[in-house]
Every structure is written in C-alpha cells, then in structure tokens.
Image 1 (cartoon, rainbow, N blue to C red):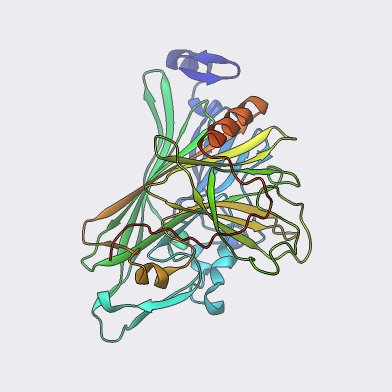
Image 2: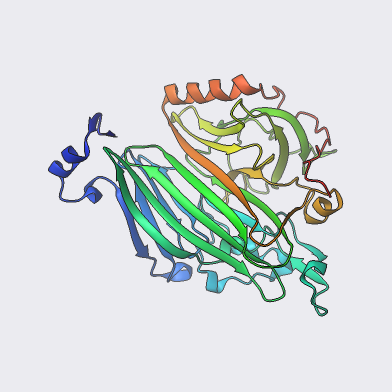
Length: 393
C-alpha cells in the first residue's frame, strides 16, 4: 500500500484520484538550460512524502538537489552543477575537481580516490605510459551516463520510482571500468536506495577504489547539528598534532560558518550491526530533521568525515570508503588495492534515509548507539591504527 497524506491507498484508489501518478509523485527527465549547467540532463524524483531529489544523468548519475518538505538536505557549492564538457581533469595541479564539486552525492573512483598521486602503470603494458597521473578523487563523477531506463513500477499496491544507467571510465592502454547504477525510492517513502556494481570490462588487471562523498548543507547542517556514528576507533585526523584543537571544532557537533576555517577530515573505524550494516547520521534537533546514511562494512570498510565550515562553502560530508585515507600508493604497498580481472566486479549498496521528527531521530540514535557508543570527547586522540583490510598482496 502507498502511504500518502496521512492515509494508505491502493493502486486503484490512486488512479481514481488523478489522471497520472505524477500529480503526487514520479520521475521526469529534464535538461538544464543556462550558465555552466547548460545541457546537463537531470532526473527529478518526487516521492509524495515531501522528499524530492534530482539525479544528474550527465554527471555519473550522482545526486544534486535533495530536500524534504522544503528543507534542504544536500549541499550546493558556488560551482553549480557544471557541465562535464567544461571540466579540466588535469588542471590546477590535480585539484580542478573542486570546480565541479557540488551536490548531495559525488561518487569517487573508479581507479583512484583521495589526493593527487602518480602511480605505476605497469599493468597496461604500454611503453610510453610508465605512470598514471591521478587527480583529486578520480574521474568518475564528471563522466556522463548512458541512461538505460527510468520510471515507475507497481508491485501490487506498492510503487517504486527508479532510474538506471551505465557510466564508462575507459581509455586505450588504460582502465575500462563500468559503473552500473540503479537508484530507487518508494512512492510515499523517505529514503533513497542506491545499488552500484563496478565491472572490469577490459582485459588488463585493473586497480579499483571507490567511495561515496555524501555532502550535507544548511539548514540540516547548522550550529549544534550532531554527528551520530558507531565510532569504534578514531584512526586519523588531518589536523592532528599541535593544531588539533586550534579551530575549536570537534568531531561530534557542528559549528556555524566562519571566515578562515580550514577543512578538517577524520577517519574512523566504524562498528557494524549484526547484519553487517554501518549507519551514520547528521541530526538537527532544533528542526527535527536528520539524514541517516547506511552502507555495508564488508563493501566499504573505512569511513571519513569532512568538515568544511568556511563561510560561503558551509558543508559536512559522510564518506564511506573502500580504502584508508593513506591513498593509492599506500594501498598498493600494504597489499590492500582491489585488483579486478576481466569480468570481475564489486558491488556497493547505500541507503539515504530522512529522519522526520523527534521520534525518527530517537530511533536512529538508538539504532546507532546500540552498536557502539561514540567517544564522548570532542577531540579524541587519533590512534593511528590503520587496520589491515585483508585483501592480500
């Protein structure tokens, strides 16, 4: 049954009350038409519950807008949702990615994540290619998808909104990795479900790294918003050392925007529940609003938190990852790089769940703290223990 407007409906009852489901909910394809966004195809999802989000077909099927009952959840940076044709991947010493950095979700990968690095290219067996020059967070988020389908599917009296596509990151004498993505949301629901599969379509043994950069903005993010997570260990902090407490912003509670704020990044070892899931949330108790991000520990064993409380760029991110923050070369040296042979794949599943009101927030708090109680201190000492990811040499 579909739950809308305080009651439940059968499929027939919905049809009796509107000529099309789109009166209440649906998925529609549109094209942005101005400025740096001109020409970008976008799918708008409306579930009817107040959840609305948009999917950028020409930006890896990543999620741009996200709001609930008119309250923004996803982050918009000053860059806008820039057309991929304007992107200069190798510009600005590897950080040109930041000129295309905006939205609720940016996918990072598929063969590199984290900071710029040059890595060996021996696997590609091409004499003029001794290295691959990787830039910040990889290439995938600025590659257009081939849209293979979208719409609504009724299963009895339940209805699912969905979209599917393939994003190809490919080169001659290089990687040929395909991201197969499906996004779903239930009519009447408050969550977004993402199912991803990364396949080596090529015939070189190819490195693979992946993470979700889930970016949250105001009003969900505000002074006093709480980061709730089953933190088993604080592994690393980008600002650890004598400057650890200099900005006065710990990991648990968000500060308001300020001028001169320098980003802070943390890595955690999260505890999983009995089903192997890891839930992390940002909660605004004043608004009675939150977003819970659920992933699987066996798929994304590492987890980062990004704090960018600079005025005009005010954001916080939840970032589940395949690898430690140590980077690409370290993953190779530690025997933790994922290597995909032809036809081999890795799958990733994520749920973004809106928390609506004190009751939803209390349930999420209980779910997460029952798995592990996070450190009570705002500045817990990083352990430096980068646990082996157990992938072998």
